[in-house]
Length: 379
Ligand SMILES: Cc1cc2nc3c(=O)[nH]c(=O)nc-3n(C[C@H](O)[C@H](O)[C@H](O)COP(=O)(O)OP(=O)(O)OC[C@H]3O[C@@H](n4cnc5c(N)ncnc54)[C@H](O)[C@@H]3O)c2cc1C
Image (cartoon, rainbow, N blue to C red; front, side, top):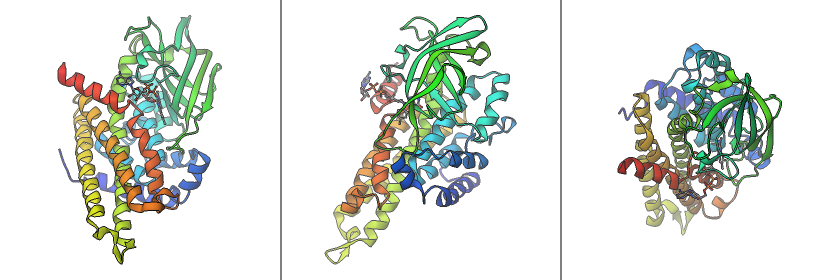
């Protein structure tokens, strides 16, 4: 595994930093207050090639690998974690599900619009009563001639209202059968498909999280991804890759909180000297830096394995588990280092602290990551 950033990665990191400094950082507090999803930013990210990072050039994407993808998410998350979350969900979940399991016609139809950022993607697995236990879902799809008819609701869906297209997993077989679910592409505007309640969240407030509701929603059979009964198994594979992106998101949050903490600790004086001179603060920085390096190694290792098309089931869960817990710990210590200022919105650590918590929940909680890891160890 290469530990130095490649020329490509260095270029991507600098491009994202420059872009964020002009188009994200000046507005993020206002957007955070208003829970505003800045669609124009995603179109611009599309122009930079960041809305189809893993999509081959033949379908309008950048044709890059997971290492470049992780680099882009880390830098975006330093600037604003919720933009990074939306970008990651669009790339890893919706777009990647179509890329991995769609047929040629489906790829031709949806990937160019998604990769260009013209369309924002959503991915619906979670339901009000089935989160960690997603395979127990109740949204159903019944075949009627050349259509599937969907009924049910998905909740906590990133871009559940604003997504132009969604990959939706619905039950096509018996409850309790892991082969009883199938994946469908549903375009916004399809009769019977509506966005529902938008969540008012603690953090990640620029990233829209909303319900998707299906009422006798007729989806043409050509929108089925892969075979009937493969939907849940496909989803687990999609999540294996997606968890690398949440690890990257966590890493960016931790890195951002740490960088601000180092600068502040050198600048803030108490008792006639910079607070960095106090061992209590210096040791916090030492712990933060060490945890971040550990999270970075696991995240780039998982990305490297994924690039080499090896199984990352355990490795992506480890990276996501460690990095997300590190993001919370580092953001917590960053607020402590900033003291009262850390608790106020004038400094970015307050926002990292709120945003970080999602990382231990989305795409499988820390407890579920430990289930995945322990099952892999004990099988
Ligand atoms: C901002 C945000 C964005 C999201 N985006 C999407 C999206 O785009 N698409 C999508 O499909 N979903 C999305 N989700 C849903 C997310 O994946 C779920 O919230 C997550 O999987 C947890 O499910 P739950 O919230 O129902 O919690 P539950 O499953 O109810 O878990 C509650 C608690 O019980 C624990 N628990 C549950 N089962 C076990 C077990 N077997 N062993 C030990 N502990 C257990 C959990 O770890 C947790 O601590 C999003 C969520 C949020 C908050």
